[in-house]
Length: 471
Ligand code: ARG
Image (cartoon, rainbow, N blue to C red):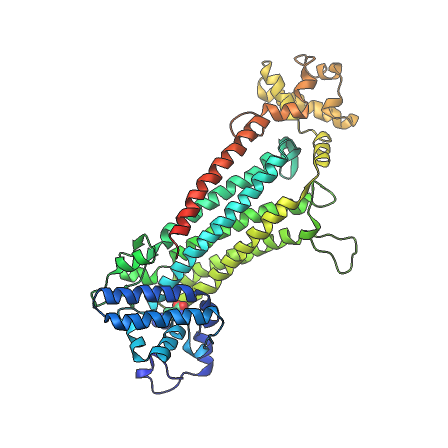
């Protein structure tokens, strides 16, 4: 096939080279953005008197027909036409004749591909933010439903202090709040309009870039044409956001996997969210959580790949930059799928509160409260720590828990202990007493749940802004 850029070539492109350099297999998913971008560009060309109005009318109608064709599945993408931009432009010229060739006035594929990718990512940010918010909603629902359930809190994966299961889950909610905010930062740098940079230096035609930006709902226009076609920071920022989000989901996955083991038995995942073993009939595996944990590696890999691809590139466009898309698209697909399946899994899981409560009662996680008791009666904390340490040692030897001790036994360690010590180290008392701001007490947790509702309703304002500023 003759190339759109074939003028200076005496030979056809090697078939293997065509295949190697082509991006149509993956960039075809930007067809809506490519067409919308071309329509806005064409209308601007007419408005600025660069291409006659009647030609632009033909071009726009032709592009709209192509959009309908692609949406109806009546479009065969061709590898020899390299990418989505040239596939569409070629079809336009086939349809309306040489006038179609006027569309590429004052534009290059370098600013065109940048425009399409910016638009595509903006659309996806809107959808991802929505899914992120739904996942947060799911966490709040589960945390609210189980707001009285007590579990051991861990450090070093050793039982540390009693906490509310709800408080533990809400830690993930607040991580996702930061992810949501990080995504707002990504949006800011994605909401920049590159078209009109031309190949790299701008154009000799009297174009109006701000008009195009307004038509395509962009907030700002790149101030430097070389930066406009070279910049992939917004992709790197998105991949960083996605890597951190996946790392959060991966940590939660690790806990879900541990908790659903027989050894913990803190939760049971719904049958609908597990799979079985082909050999061991008794198995019920937490595959979703494992896969999310596993897919974190590939998302972080895409971030690393794009950083490496970018680091040695001279300005402006280099074909290396075509490598930005597969990792970006795969990341988008991976996080959307992960968030969707995760929210459903959380809402359906069974919480085994008896087992969690038993785990707390079987250990010494009220030891800190016992030390705090002594401190409140005047003993310096370090001495109190020592006293309780001795007491724990005694209990281990006697195969007892702190709550099993008699007042005489307590007093053999310190005469500051009185009648009320047993009440002070009841698990519910330990929870209620951690009432410092952000702590695990029932009251603090209730306030955190209320705060979460406010955060979620404020996020709705951002979600509406995304919808409004997308096509
Ligand atoms: N397919 C290319 C990409 O994805 C489009 C831009 C190509 N420009 C060029 N001069 N070869 O980056």
